[in-house]
Amino acid sequence: MRISKLKRAIAFVSVVAAAGLGLVPAQADETCNSPYLSNLIKGQEDFLYVWTLGVKGMGDGFDKLVTLDVNPGSKKYGQVVAQVSVGARGEAHHAGFTDDRRFLWAGGLDDSKIHIFDVHSAPGNPKLVKTITDLSARSGLVGPHTYYAMPGRMLIGALSNAKDRGGATGMAMYSNSGDFISKYDMPTANGGDGHGYDLAINPARNAMLTSSFTGWNNYMMDLGTLMKNQSAMKQFGSTMVMWNLKAMQPEKVFNVPGAPLEIRWSLKEGDDWALTTTALTSKMWLIKKDAKGEWQAKEVATIGDPAKIPLPVDISITADSKGLWVNTFMDGSTRYFDISNPEAPRQTYAKHTGAQVNMISQSWDGKRIYVSTSLLENWDKRGSDNEQFVKLFAWDGKELKDAWAVDFYKLKLGRPHHMKLGANSLQRGTVAGPGAAALAGK
Image (tube, rainbow, N blue to C red; front, side, top):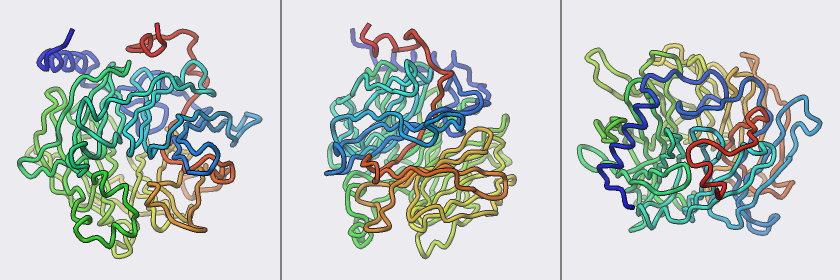
């Protein structure tokens, strides 16, 4: 039976309300997960799941989920213990857990396929249980990027559209079992440019923030060619949007020039602010309510030398919301900013961590920092600078110390991108949770 849009909306609001809009951020696990995530890791993680781009002629050449053993007490510490190929090369990019943390969704920016992995039955040996191929057909969207856990559902932010493959895009809602529910367009009125990238939710404020990047025509183009194409360089997002979470309606569009990417809300209970960085202008922006209670966005810091386009990519906020890690792709640097005063962030540390670096993940206690390298197949560097690794660093509050590195090219695995943590403590012998039975074929 088809469900009307009205019933879908009512059902969604009911689910969110039932989950509680006053949720307190999780006190374990990595720091950049959805606030609706349960079954959290307590203490030391055992595994690192790495969503990896396939490289033609390297191994099987396909995108794959690679599992690393990251428990210092293990005999296989710092080694690959599993890999699951998806049988295609679709520009593997980001991944995200369902709210019950039993399944990891990961997708391709090129082929728009979404792969669902069972990571709870055997955390050290994930299994591919479903591939969703109808995103474009059902929603008109292309390039699934952000996978954000909602109560019993997954909200997916896309980068492009199937009509002209430009930057106009939206978000798609799926059930945990992989059934399409609804689509939400990025606003094009009241200053909106229709672009999308990341999304992040603060349930206590009934607030969802989205950021903006560029469409398939640009992100699948060679970076050098793109940067010389004046017309194409004008096709990048320059906005962020504040949404009413319960209504799933845009409320305010902010002018944030230079392609604002990852969004991180403060994890401190009671806080009402978030940070982002802009890829093309190398700035840090704060989104916060002003004295009148109105949401505002303002530039608060500069990252590196903007003239050299260091290209800030991923960021990771500390659990106490006093620090922010920023990876800059072009100069291969990992920077730490003191954000104890979010109105005036200060860089207090930097380390050259590779010829190119992209994603960064940290444990909740802040002692372990994971870094990966690949950005996009056609944007990664060439020759000797095309390093492809995952590194673990120990952070003592003063400096990053090398723990180990896994060379993905040497192991013929491909280009490592997004990383998520896993643990044996999360193993379950039976399938449960929203949509779990359907994914198990029961």
